[in-house]
Length: 201
Image (cartoon, rainbow, N blue to C red):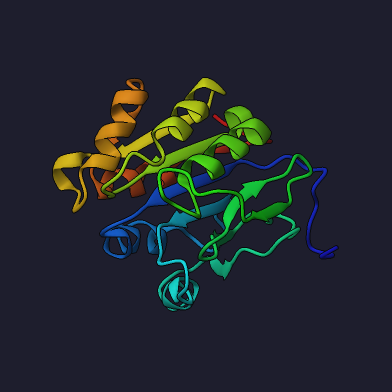
């Protein structure tokens, strides 16, 4: 186990899902988060199954937080951004480690936003914030509803500002309590969160 990990100390987390237009949208959010951001951030972007992902390399150059591609059985560490690997679902285990799965695609997607959000909601409860960004299918709607039902914050990019409007519009339909914001508003919301133990105040 990584000596830096303190899994017995509760910490909050953020999950983000995006598809078409993801890089531009994420570029306006992730680089604003400080190096000491006290949450683990997990990101699912729909990618071609049989291609390497350049996301961790792209955002390592732009972000103040540590950025990496998620690995199976890896402990989550606050202050780190984890990108899901192509062709694997990304899940959170109850012991705050990550898991990769080759189960069937959800909404034609693997990795699936729903799979990550639902597993993270079960583990982090009201210490989780879910963010749905641009995309053209319905993946993430059920997952965001699970985040909200567990007591977490639900944020959605305003569909009128998204390159792919269907994903945020579907999330709003499934989760009417979600905060609907433009990208700058989402970045400001995340930066203003004040973690208190394993939740937010």
